[in-house]
Every structure is written in C-alpha cells, then in structure tokens.
Image 1: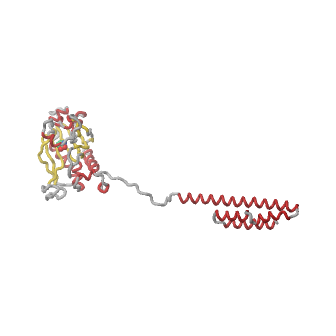
Image 2 (image 1 turned 90 degrees about the vertical axis):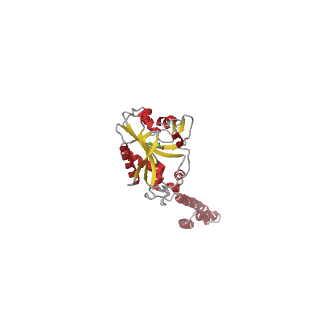
Image 3 (image 1 turned 45 degrees about the horizontal axis):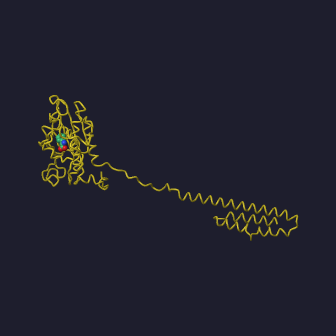
Length: 337
Ligand code: PHE
C-alpha cells in the first residue's frame, strides 16, 4: 500500500517537472486525481482491507490526494504567472528600436533677413522699435507730409479700416511715433508688416519693411551713404551701389539706392530688365516739415531715414523669383533655408 503511494508520488513529481504548459498540467491532474487514476483505484480497494489497516491506509491515501492536489495547483499557478510575465514582456516597447525623429523647423527667409539686418544696425548703435499695423491716417500720411490730396497717396494702394484708420502702407509712421516719445539724438530700426492692395509675381498684399531713422545735430547725406553702403556690403558682399535722385514727401533730398544686379553681375538680364541695376531701397534726409509735425525743432536737428522691403532683399539673396512663394506655406520651399 505505502509502496503504491510512494510510486504514485514519484511518478507524478516526475511528470510535473516535465510539464511544458498548462495543458500538460491539466492532463496530469486528471491522470493522477481523476476517476480512473491509480489513486482512485487504490482508495476503492481500501474497503477490502482489514479494518485496522483500512484506517491507516485510508489516511495515507487521503494525505497523498491532498498533497498531489496542492502540488498540481501550485505548478498551475506558477505556469500562469510565467505566462503573464511573458505577455507583459511581449507588449512592452522595444527600447532598442531607434526613435521617431521630431521634425525641427527652420527660420522663414523673411525672419532670417530681418534678423541679419537688425544685427548689422544694432552693432552700430541702433535700437529696435515697433509700431501698430492698424495705423491712423495722421501717422501714415499726414504727419509725413502727405496731405489728403497729395498724389503720393496713389502709390500706396491703401486698405482703409475707416476714414481715419488704415493698415499701414509703410513703416515710416513709426518715425513720427518714435520722435513724439523720444528726444534726439536717436537711432532706431523698425522692422514690421505693411499692407498694400496689390498682388502679382513681385507684390503681396502684406509684406515686410524695415525703417531706419537717425536724428542728431549734424547728420548728413554722407552718414546716410556710409550706413547704407555698410548694410549693402554686409548683405551682398563687395558690389557696386548707386544713389539715384528720387522723391518722397517726408525726405529732402531723397534717393533710391540701386545695387549691381546680383543675377547677371551688371551685364543686363531679365531680373534687372536689362539695366544691370536693381532698386532695393528708398532713403533721404528727414524733411524739416516732418520734424515740425513730430514736435522736433527743425533748426536744431538733422536726420536720415531709409526704408527697405525685406522680401525683395530675401529674393535677391536666395535667388527666389516669385514673392508669393514666401506665403504659400509649402514646406518643400520653406525647409531649404
Ligand atoms: N516709406 C517709403 C516707402 O515705403 C520708403 C522710405 C522710407 C523712403 C524712409 C525714404 C525714407 O516706399
């Protein structure tokens, strides 16, 4: 009897050790504890034993049954836990995989050129200021010596907000606002958005200008030429520059500045309409009328002012032939800068 118990015990232990999965364990369970198991047969045979031995063997058989049950249950539980651990490991992210790259943006060409020009002028003592894009007619025109009936208004293709308010057509109104706030001497640079009702290959309804203003007791045209020559040479290298007489109501004398065509080096091409020159900015000495309008004494100070279009400089710098590309938000275009 006890031999049979030991044999069952040993054989079950051995099978438990070899079990590879839960299914194996269920089979072991039915083989050793089921109705046709050796143990069940053994328990059935107890009734034939003499009473004394029956009690002893019965106790031993019961103890074996309980212990087999426990061992199989523990093995099952271990197997289930191992399965859970495996499942978690399979779901866990594979940290050895290379990560997905975050796309890093680039600076817009207009931003790049603005920053470059700003740094050229701040290195010469200019401070950066700004002003409102919705502007009063007074600052955009009137104070700049462009009264209501002045023909220069026609050139501005103004978006009006109301009779007295408009989207500024240039950054020059910031000259007046600054002079109203600050006493001379001053050197300021004002980059910003301006608006004109115009749209084609070289015009967008919104574009960027940079305004410069310097006021002191003896500012001369030579200072203007010097500053703008430094600017152009830092932007485009050592190229030819010419100052061409022009007219702006707020400067006197006034000039437009041309640079040697950067595409054909002055030979004449489509970009410069065969002239070899490209106009890049307007400038002049501040008209005394403007000083008076802004509250400065025109006999005590002189000044220089200039205004340039940022998109135009960016187009020439990067060889871009259509201004609208700046505002179409095509990443294939924008990511080149
Ligand atoms: N405001 C002028 C324009 O938009 C440019 C300019 C600025 C000219 C300052 C002279 C002086 O065309």
